[in-house]
Amino acid sequence: MRSPRDLPSVDRLLADERLAGEPHELSVAAARDVLARARDELRSGGEPGPLVDAVLEELGRVRRPSLRRVLNATGVLVHTNLGRAPLATSALERVVEVGTGYSNLEYDLEAGARGSRQDHLASLLCRLTGAQAALVVNNNAAAVLLALAALAEGREVVVSRGELIEIGDGFRIPDVLARSGARLVEVGTTNRTRTSDYARAIGPDTALLLRVHQSNFRVVGFTELPTLPELAELARRHEVPLVDDLGSGALTTLGDEPTPAESLRGGADLVTFSGDKLLGGPQAGVAVGRIDLVERLRRHPLQRALRADKLTLAALEGTLTLALDPARASAEVPVLRMFHEPFASVHARAERLAVLVRGEVEETVARVGGGALPLAELQSAACAVEESLAESLRLGEPPVVAVVRDGRTLLDCRTLTDVEVEEVAAAVVAARARADDGK
Ligand SMILES: *Cc1c(COP(=O)(O)O)cnc(C)c1O
Image 1 (cartoon, rainbow, N blue to C red):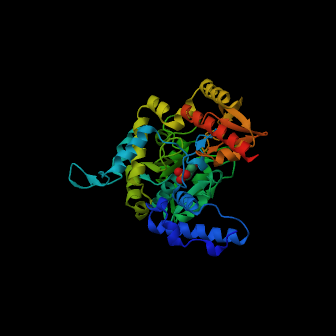
Image 2: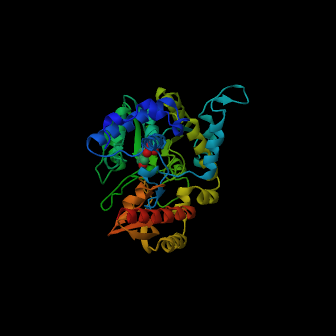
Image 3: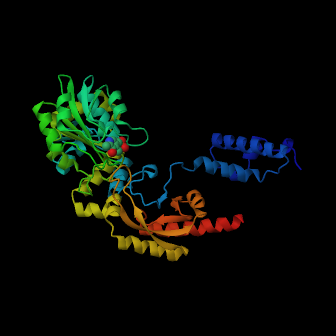
């Protein structure tokens, strides 16, 4: 039995040739940690293992990325906890291309002078939505905040009580409104708001009418909300803008999700939406609409703080370019591909997985998630395996996140690709082997 005094010094430990190529400060810190743990072990009567191996392991742990790829076997397409929308290959290629070297991010190549990062995507967004102008920021929460700050600071914003919603992770419309410096004027009730409610609330201090899409819930039964054209007509009569926060930003019709183009055609003056919900691109927020309003957003000081970076712009441009060709977008934008994939082909994937891991195919219901189409049920299929594997699958490499239900782990195949199914099969085999080792 050794005592703590027998442990080598940091320098002697680091003299081992296996640690020769490691950066000095990092290995000193790792060696100190390993020696401290070894001292504790010896004091409590244990026997520390080989110290150099422990240092190498510690160095590996420090270098292992925390943000990692995971396999989504939950059947939730836009999974808020799992990074929302996976990117299309061609969008990722744009990120690599633009990020690898320099770019014309804020350089006008024709004029040979300073340009604006907001100019690159504007014409694509206008073409796709029919808007006069467009602006991109970091996420849709930022787009809403910027719109309210630029158009309504110190003034009143009229919102239906049925639309004072929470999106998730504490993003609440009344709070964002307060932060923007605007004053909230609530009208109507939770289930019923009429055009006349809005009309009564409009006064000299009214800056705009705000409509918020009920993204992640629906009110059913005795309900009433004015149509967009009705609200637009009211807004026009009182010469105040109508701002429509859509949330998900589907560019083509998906279920009953409104598109930005429909919203603008219906009379909204400014429309905001996310880049990474049903648009299927990177995290981003887009505001499209009347040129004078978008210009006020662009000139507001917060725009500088909320603007998107070049990698986001590159990924969004790549995604929007695909959206110009809806058939191609449905095949290549992952969120859209998963949404449209026929049940039979999802089922075939589940059968293949079941054969590979000796599981059972079970019919499931996949969901859009991410606060979009909350009632949409996508017929799906999963491979069911032992419940006890769920944790081990999560802790494996790559991690697999699945759903535990009725005593089984369900691996939903709507959110897995054909290639990923092979990886999930290998992960199940590895998890079972680990379980056997542990016995
Ligand atoms: C999701 C959502 C937001 C927030 O968008 P992020 O891109 O998550 O910032 C705002 N408004 C509505 C209606 C939404 O659905």
